[in-house]
Length: 157
Image 1 (cartoon, rainbow, N blue to C red):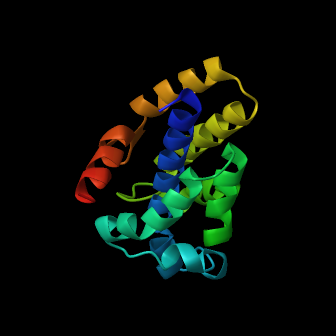
Image 2: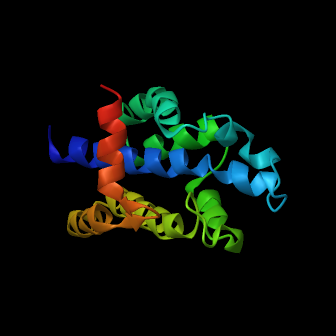
């Protein structure tokens, strides 16, 4: 696998995680603090994390087959009708505080994923490597991001 393929694979994996975790917006919708309409397709993912991960695999494979990093992001935006910017705003919502799922920890992760996409589009490989290192050490609500990705991928086998 060449560097570009590895980078695309990493980007798509992290973008998949961000969208996967966004399915927890259902909790804010149930509390009446978020409107359901823009999130209908995200909420349609199963609540169970393994079933939701399985449901994302077709879109993940399509994104990995993209000709560019930008195209890979568009695949997700078209499928779920929300962008990474919208998801980051969702994660910044103060109603996530003290939540065991979704939320504020994911705002920083989404920001890093967006930084990664920009660095890849601009061909800044040194920045890409630094961002990937930060993502590999990033923590979400219950542990390391890379551990979550490894766990979800292992459950697919």
